[in-house]
Image (cartoon, rainbow, N blue to C red):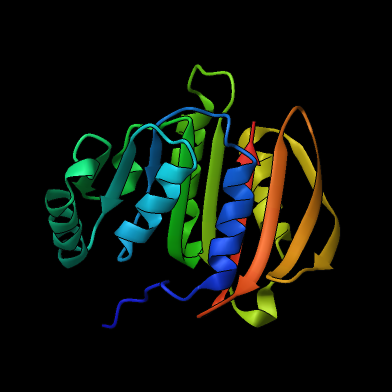
Length: 198
């Protein structure tokens, strides 16, 4: 099976920048899935004021590549921790970024468990981000908003969607001190990126 990489994913990187620019002031560790292009992602995350990066990887060949990167780059040794295994078992952090490379339906269990565990953490402000693929004929973000509403006990609804340079930005109104941002774009495949700040 060929592993997708995102070295030339311009729209994805722009959306990442938009999301991280909204949480620049949150000085915390980052729990993430750095993936096959770990070096590029880690350089980006470090530039966004994250203290330590904790990345999980289930695919052993990618995990070994990540370890090789860690041991060959001295400046990363105290700032990055690569772990082999399922991120669903990870200790939640104030900032979580999951690039799941599957559909929302397939990722729902992982998202719900980590988001709920983060939600129950005792900290002032938290951010949960995730990216999922979608089929063009089922591009609505409404099922994702319903899921967030149910899990967090909030009321978020789609107000408008506007075409932007990178894709589509969805404008969402929320109650109960929650901010939800949603973006849809396409590089190698159609994706939604959702950011929840609460």
